[in-house]
Length: 338
Image: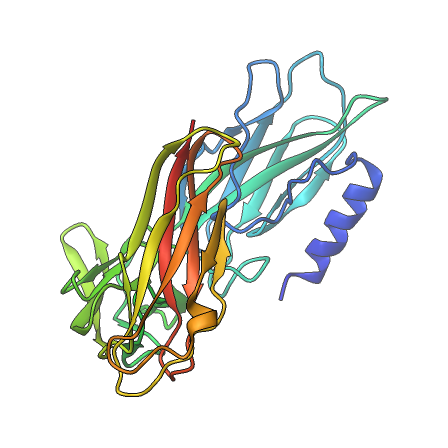
């Protein structure tokens, strides 16, 4: 749970000095929080440098630079990692912040990994408030004695199905910390034709078979590993192709349709439910109208179009569920708006 004293201090500061929100949360998750780029004439955190690696339990000394033409009414340091003890109304704009030794951080995230530190500033008169931020990376200096996960095995049932593996480590001082956000942790798959895995531990089913997902916590040439067996059972429903790429398409215009073919692989009829599509894509299909698909090789077709609303890479997915006990099949969609 977030520190009550921290929440009350932030609320007081916001009521006193912070202008209406610009839509950016102070306490975003570590993956979402991105410090603003500072110009030479703006208030900025000058120490520690952005990206500094810090240790659990370490006390940071934070210095904020205020240009001569700026008149500050009040300033404090806030972060998912905690808050400074000081609330200053005049220079020096120097603060201390103690990194927690264990547990989680504000918002429920893990301690290890990247976190923002904000200098929250209230200005005098009508001048708007000025928030500036850096990111710090909280990492242990030692290796865990062992890694563990609540999952003794990963069981996948459908093409494109995703599952996130959460890995923790027990350190020599007894601390038990989640490791997924730490830069020291990586993941690998023993067979990428069966399943792939991202650096964040998200496993994606590619094809039936057996594999191992291995988490490695590494410091220099030393490491600790945990391997989790994965089983992707025989398919009940095949969807081909497994991904759709629409290439380039003009913003606001609709592409020619691309097709997915669904095939029933089991020895009984299969009902297909209305697909759920996400992103700048739309679908029509005959799967609901022709359901149930005939046993062993009964088919239906989904037609998908792409209408980008802005330039650049656009992504989405379509989820296809059926009456069998197997999981939802997911096909990832992509295209480029031009």
